[in-house]
Length: 301
Image 1 (cartoon, helix red, strand yellow):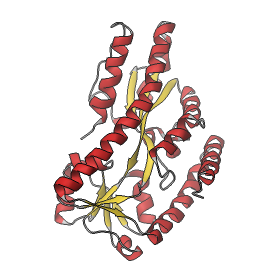
Image 2 (spheres, helix red, strand yellow):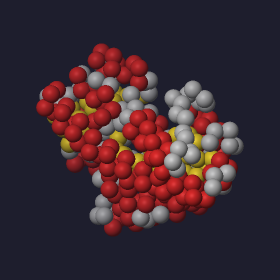
Image 3 (cartoon, one colour):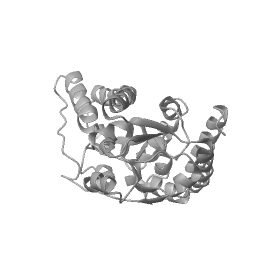
């Protein structure tokens, strides 16, 4: 269940139509109805699609920064830090420059956290190591390397897997995702800190299609996308907070803050994974060095 469809795409469609006095209209298609998720970047790059939404991991064969954009585990601790890294320190521009080589204009929709829910609280390293967790992508590798047993289960089977004990924990976004999937009915502990905070939703525009627009409209599109990042990042964070509060009040959910020994173990595992991402290109090394310097300034390294 995705909040991105109406909240993000519905908004950008409305804003672009209003600001161009109806000259620019977007037609929205559900995920997978035109191209497979993993083919969307190529379709936009070739100009077959004018616009698409992706997760950076779907473009990692083209964009060497995709792994860092998808969210290195245990890097940022607050959403504003990820936003600052993207917009103030220049990571977004680095992504944009790399995507431009493929005739794609890259615009991160928002940065947001991924947080786990578990059936029993994690109070020690032993507790963590005994967990069976539904995960995906880089986080699945991370959780397994950190000592848990992580496996992928499609969203449609997630509730029953948690309910029946096939898995003890899962992540589906953070509070909004868990709430919309009914996970709090069967898993009463919401784990913090976040596994990662990242620009996991990206809007990509065909540069060919953009170039065909009059200059004033090109500027409207870019300005609207830049604004979208801040509006959606803040809105998502607000909805996270009120959704978790609702789950605590209505469903008896408790926040399980991982003990220091578990956090330290996760950080050590995470940093080894970060270094792998830094090997993907000169650009990736530069971005990773920038990230490490920033996290050191924040007192985390």
